[in-house]
Image (cartoon, rainbow, N blue to C red):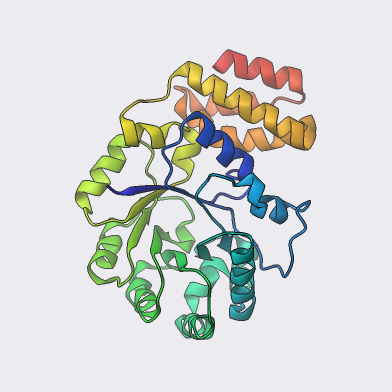
Length: 306
């Protein structure tokens, strides 16, 4: 059966979110961390340290994602991850953020296939203690770039290729390019994982029927909007309103215990940016939450919605 992956989403799918999603619903075969910059040591009081702290990921199949344009730094971090007990690393070649792209990292790398080639040649010339996968987009400005980019990936022993079926300039808008993804299915040497706009169990089923040889499907925004989606795909049991309320309350309390109310309200508003889409009047629901200025207002707004 096609596996199910939780996508890395900055400020959203951190370790607490992963723990609570697993506790309430499960159904995830691999959890990917939001991207991490290479480190030579790990202070577990930092955000990156908390993400990597083995006790925060105990019992979960977690894959750390690395963002860098330095192959030696990537190799060093991969070796460090092995000392923490991780068994796979993922490289980010897809982040569309302007600050990331400006440094020729993430999807910024896709503008220069020669630089990509040099990066992978140096990285894979070193002894690495674990498989390395890549998360990519189809190109920077146009999907016509994709065949040349895929050819670079095909030169190297990438363990799997996770393809967000958009180019960087589309960000998260428009419709994922299934035709370009089909090209990857016909030509990729690495096992393929699809990513992009899967928001229901029915869409997952339709996708896997269209591409029956997929290794996995990665879901991000659709899983924040519907935390029960992975369980529903695996078992057919959809999330009930009561389960959503329990998930929310657990997440909120856990955030407050770690960050306090002020920071938690900010983080929960990020979550509601996706979760609000499940309500009939999504714009009104999200606006209602985002107007909240304190805990009492927030909890009252959530009670009204749920």
